[in-house]
Image: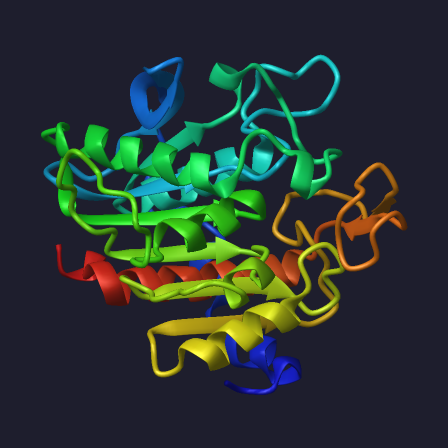
Length: 298
């Protein structure tokens, strides 16, 4: 991997390629589908938002998992709006020929956010969210416009950790239905430390994108995971001068003392945007997807 200080310089000449969508985006539509997770022996019915690709025909799909703050905006008066980061990602990918399904793991379980809850006391875990992702995959196989053999899983933070969990082929539970494997995974600033302590084997290529200064989910654990799994198809890119949520649009750098987790429990975590890192990370993501889904050959 190149030194992190040179990573942006390598990618900067390509940044203009992602500043303007290739085709006009169209609005997402609400959908519902069952998770493979259950409550009282009944499948949990999840909400989602599906964005059709701007190109006609059968297309690849990106299933996207939100972070601990949920799918929707936390801004007062905009609580029913999709979070700007999720909306922007959906529209960018949509314009490049991907369908996008934003999965809401929280509303059906009666919560909006779990960011201020200690990891060990959370009722919604990456194991629950893995079953949500598999439920989304099952739904995808039933959509005529989706290529079920070219589905990628993407997640931010807690959703990124859930992406790592989903792509671990060492799970011992036996599903009642056979599903295609995810073609690839993309995880923005996931928590990697839990996967250093358990049996882990990737079943798909994975790209991890994390900020150098992230004190919520520090990059060191992801680098250790990369070394542990080598020569597995795991790539970790670290962006200088960047904190957690570096790809969120227009989010000032701030210390969140309401978050009890992170590298220094009880001292808060730092979050905020870095537009240069965001553009560089998105360009790397596009190239990763094109390589693994052959989108440029469609």
